[in-house]
Image (tube, rainbow, N blue to C red):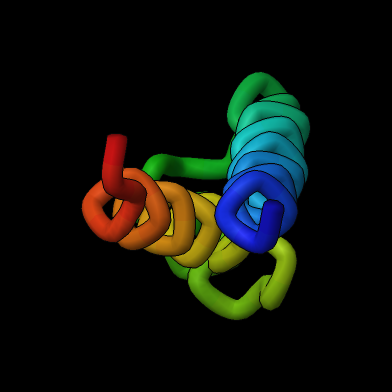
Length: 66
């Protein structure tokens, strides 16, 4: 039961981070360059949810025994 809970936490974090990164892509048509975009998202804490969520899900899938 604990594995499912932590997997869903990781999934939620990954979805939140991915949606946030995609939403911030709307700054590109306004005139922001790719370098400015990556500098901007590197300073936003919610953009780090994507890799953290993927790491949590990977760790849970690796530890889960059939």
